[in-house]
Image: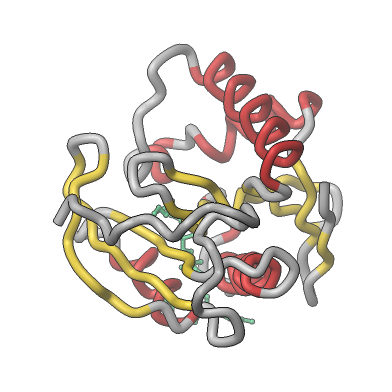
Length: 187
Ligand SMILES: CC(C)(COP(=O)(O)OP(=O)(O)OC[C@H]1O[C@@H](n2cnc3c(N)ncnc32)[C@H](O)[C@@H]1OP(=O)(O)O)[C@@H](O)C(=O)NCCC(=O)NCCS
């Protein structure tokens, strides 16, 4: 598991002890309205997410980090494998108290650097609802380019991505011997 310090943030894997703070951020109404709804009680959903992230760290060497300002969990950000697209996304969400200060862009830039550098990924994408202008602004600040509209789990979304300028033919999920998958068929 990888811990990264950026100029202002600590990005570290989430732990079971973070569950309560993670729920307060991830299921805050102003955050949750942009993300997939919980399919169970938020605390149970958070536990499932934190367990899934731990498994992804073991199996893939990446997962979303908790975003910490000092000791305080203010968000999540990082790389996440999406089976529906057979590709790696960069995702972010901040508690509303932490909006408007560049933290999402700072954390996500570190995630892109890690994905393209240490992991050698060939492509990283981001999707969001067409009306989520704040998230699309983060994508543009990071240099991701709009490619197409897609449907993800029944939700209309816009797809932005960036290719790795140093390893354009690398596999999309970082595994050494998988051929690159075909382009998304969901547009
Ligand atoms: C998407 C989300 C993370 C964006 O948060 P954000 O604070 O707008 O994005 P950043 O952290 O990159 O901050 C950029 C803003 O901080 C400002 N800012 C202030 N100080 C800054 C600094 N030192 N460096 C960079 N930007 C700074 C920028 O001007 C910009 O504000 P503006 O959009 O009014 O111009 C946030 O709206 C959120 O959590 N939403 C709910 C969850 C969500 O939608 N997640 C994405 C689902 S796909």
